[in-house]
Length: 127
Image (cartoon, rainbow, N blue to C red; front, side, top):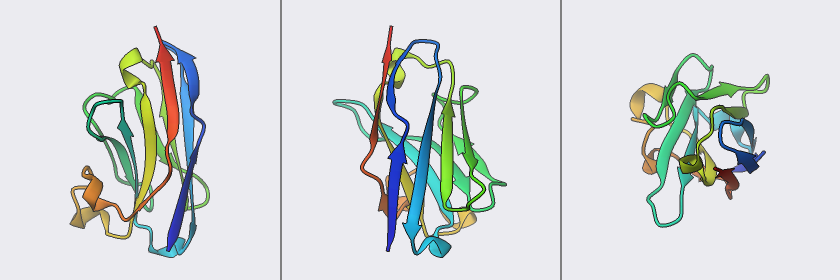
């Protein structure tokens, strides 16, 4: 089993920045891909970003390209989401997820590509 915990959410003004952190524990050797999703009230969960185990591969949702950046920490079981130029429409609960499947074998943009999920952290962007 793998446990996933997010941190770093909060309230920020439009145009500001936030950095989210994600830490996986337990059977972390099995984690191949880590991803971030978000869900706003009344909307479906949306893919934000994903990163492979080595950090060589990354992918982003269209709505955050050029503004958000995903990275791995020095420990392979950590991932970060740097969010810049935040907009009110970025307001959502952000979830970190971990997959036991290799990057090349999954689209990594779907919720079903991931095996473990955190509880989520709220990000609110005021206008």
